[in-house]
Image (cartoon, rainbow, N blue to C red; front, top):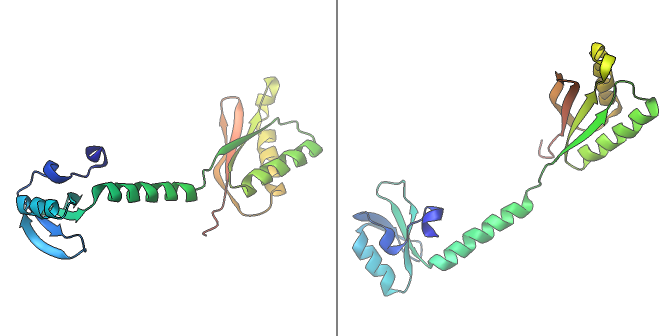
Length: 174
């Protein structure tokens, strides 16, 4: 498991000398690896390589099990705080009634307020394909009916028999 995380522990450290940090966090300087390993064993702790890319690599004397637990705990906490943004899709046709347009616009507004991205799609059938400008007008009408902070992530564009645009909520940090 230690190799999966990229950290080498105790006998896995195969370099001649390391920059050592003791259990109190004090710099001990550059020490031969065998001596650093002996110092860690004397106080029943592990020698963990915390910065393998440094020259020489930085090793720290600590309780590896506890260290790994703390790292996993930090990872879990950071995952709890992040908001997963999903992509919702609203489909329409170029011949949409005004009431239906209001209804769909309210749904789009609710999705954006909830922090989700929205893909607004216009489906063209048969002869409607000759009048793609009607679909563009419908998408512009949707934009006019929306309020609040959002951005057009993808401008209206044709994709086969559909025209779509993607809207994203503005982040609260801005």
